[in-house]
Image (cartoon, rainbow, N blue to C red; front, side, top):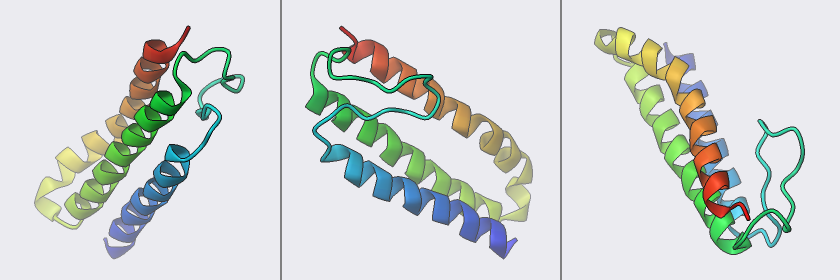
Length: 104
């Protein structure tokens, strides 16, 4: 149980670090579910796009930390299992929404 809490919190902290570095980038940040990297020619406002991706990563990081804390409670096992399967998919859907909003 303790290892699960540590693992989810580690993933959350890792995504917080990624979010902070993404926010300062001058080029558009790519996402791992894309076949090719995003170029500046594809995005209308690169700083706003990077801020939106950073905000998405911060929300995902907070969710991971919350999942880690939920994992420590035995009573929430069903909720934890369902959220841990859905949460990464929500990150991919959220990125697609951000990309469509800033695409030229």
